[in-house]
Image 1 (tube, helix red, strand yellow):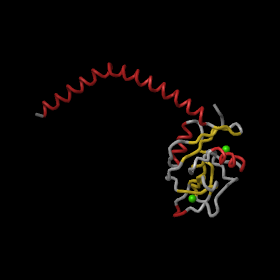
Image 2: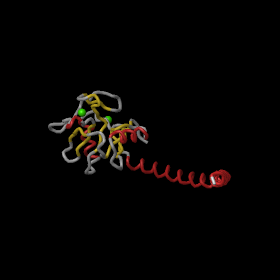
Image 3: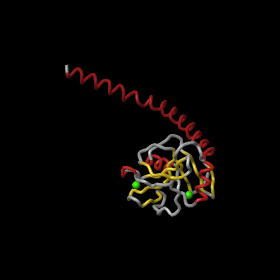
Image 4: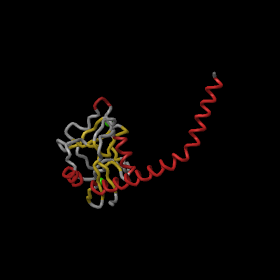
Length: 172
Ligand SMILES: [Ca+2]
Ligand SMILES: [Ca+2]
């Protein structure tokens, strides 16, 4: 019985491997065609959604993500979670991205109480904390977000899922 099972598995494997090249070519063509379409769509999307401020470009991410996933996604498109250097950048962001949702900014205090920007690890000089923030509630709030309703910042658990804004030092 064991021998028959083994033979059956062997036969199926051989058939599968032999068929792979013919399937592979077809799949490859479909894959390439799909990839081309997706690349085109991605470029089109980027063109539409990047906004320019002082030679830097900004992009509002689609689906809410954890802070770390948001930062990773920004890095993948050549940027970083937004670094807000001064009040005029902060004000500009407010006017451009008031989508009725909180969004992550690139500020963390992975060393408690020392807030640094993820882009260059610079200590935050300009800040726009809401009153009583950062509160580090439950000893578990190490990532900063922009509160859409009161236009100020608050610290929150990094695994919360919010929208996010990427900044890039160049534009398309
Ligand atoms: Ca900036
Ligand atoms: Ca903290």
